[in-house]
Structures are given as C-alpha cells and as structure tokens.
Length: 275
Image (cartoon, rainbow, N blue to C red; front, side):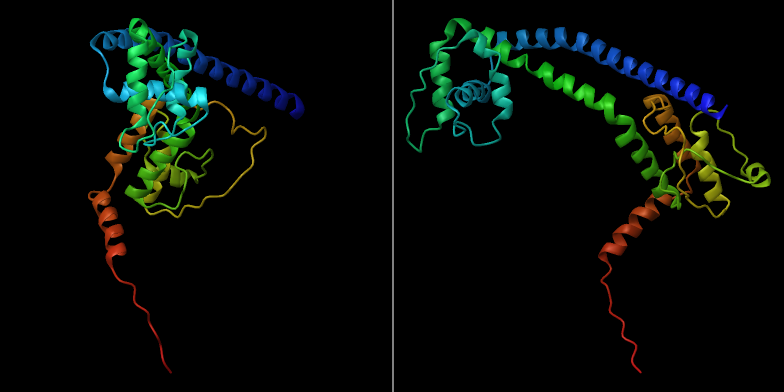
C-alpha cells in the first residue's frame, strides 16, 4: 500500500515538474517573440541615424579577432562580445585588407574602423544591423537565467535575509518546508495570513512572542527539492515583503544597520587577567 502511494506521489510530482518546465519554456518563447521584432526595429532605426566611433571600431575589431586570431586590436575589455557581434557579418563577407600602421601613437581599432567604413560603404547599415542582432542571444540568455534561478537564488535568500535583519531570528530559511507547534502555542500566535506568506508569519509571530525555535534537518520521501516552486514570483514575493515590513519592530532596520557599523568601528581590546 505504501509502495503504491509512493509511486502515485512520484507520478504526480513528475507531472507537476513537466508542467512547470513547459510553462517556463512558453514564457521564454513569448518573451523572445516580443523581443526579436522590437530589437530589430530599434536596430534599424538607430542604423538610420548612424553610430558612434566606438561601435564602428568594435565591429571590425571583432572581425580582426576572428580572421587573424590576434587579440591586440582592442585592449580595453575582453574580445568575446566583439567576436560574437562579428559572427553574423561573416555571411555578408565584408571587405577588409587588414592594412594598418604599427605606430604606438595610432590605435589599431580606429585604423580598422576607417578601412571597414571605406571598403563597405554600400552595406554598412546591413552589417550594422547584423551585428546588433546578436543582442537577441544575450536577451534570451538573460531571460533563461531569470526563469531558471530567480526563485532559488534570489527570491528566497532575499526574503530570508530581510527577515533576519528585521527580527534577528535563529531560523536560517524562512520558507523551510515543515513547522511544528503545540496546539496551545499555535492558538497563541493568532495567525491571520491567507496566502503563501502564512509560513513566514508563523516564524515571525514565534519570535515576537519570545518562543524558543530550533531548526532540525529532516529527510523527505520522495525527495521534493527539485519540484517546481510554489511561489508566484511577484505576487507572493511582494506579499511576503509587505508582511515582513508590517510586523517588523519599529526601528529594527536602523538598529541593525547602526549595530553593524558600530561593531566595525569599535577597536578590539585584548584583555589579560593576571594572577
């Protein structure tokens, strides 16, 4: 009987994970479908009005990196972004002879920029748009990173950090999975939340009334740490933050900040007890 229940729970958990992943992929696809035409129109509009000197130097410098394997065309920052921006231009085959002076008084990137502009007058705007189209890749990478890691590495640590600053509790994770109270203690807390912030309110009320709390590691079967998050990023995160601020003792944030500053500024003293 227990084995059947475990199998059923595992199937339900697997279905929930697949559903959450499908929702994430749909979100990424929708955002990319919006971003691609917007970035394309923005790029075309700016291409009509021209570009700055640095941009005219970045593009041929990236081509120079790809064509020669040398990285001395642009010393200010790493060459990878310029190389990625120059990749679409390989389809257009821009004309550059790579003739330049070795004089230390003339920057190589501006020599390459001048040659690129002079040799590709008829296709400059097209090549500029191709180079700017690589921003879609970085946009997609950013969206994927946000969808993949926001809940685990930003939302929960941020809210737990705010809780520690305001209440100075002994619980490290305000959103831990299981909590246990006696019935009389539970009634004493007088909980009022109706959403996901209910879990945090239990810990906060326990700190306010002076209860002793302890954090005990437990094992779950089946392991649900990889299941999709229950929190809805903006709605539930905002409600958690409002709850923390509403229940915070007056001046707790200032006391915490000033206490940290004072501990850093106060010189340490060595005490010696002689016989």
